[in-house]
Image (tube, rainbow, N blue to C red; front, side, top):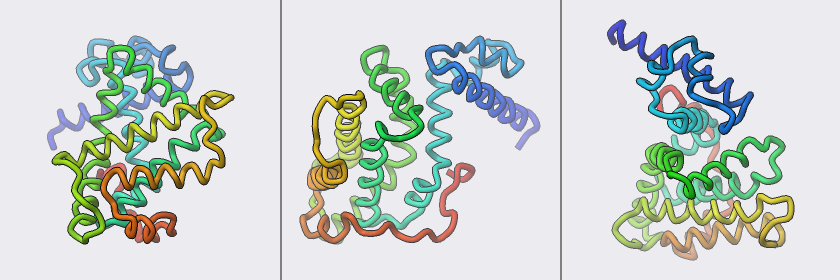
Length: 233
């Protein structure tokens, strides 16, 4: 690696570090690229050489946090299988559906920003979908193929990643109804609702009833050490 490349990579990390401080202090709306550039002690023009917009900066930060999540890192390090597929869906449902009750409301604010982006220019949503798809999509698709090969799922259409996004969108909308202090819809018992949502999604992506009965709700696979890390992802 050349010295120039190392300098460029270091500058990129310095910009991200400065952006994290600005977003933490002022939120997304209250942060500007000018303030991030000032915090990083660079010109705004130089910042734009690395990140074309504020949305790109924020999406990169969220992607790094996602990659560094130990539970997700462990899951993505598992061998693709029906069990991995079910665990992935359970994790996604649990993460989103429990946002309203999380002590840190920052994640809930991020989801609101994601939804708002769809009604605006869509830039932030497109960037985040791209990063999430590249991070999780391959494990989802490979696990679904293993489930089909094992006779534990039927093939639904020709685009397996569409099934991942359909599942994601379903959970996102379900979670959105629960965000207000008074939920928009009463789903009843939270744990039962999560279980029902998992069953709905797993049936929708083609899993058999036998596979769902076998794998849903079982204990997650034990960790075998750091399979995937933020550095290696």
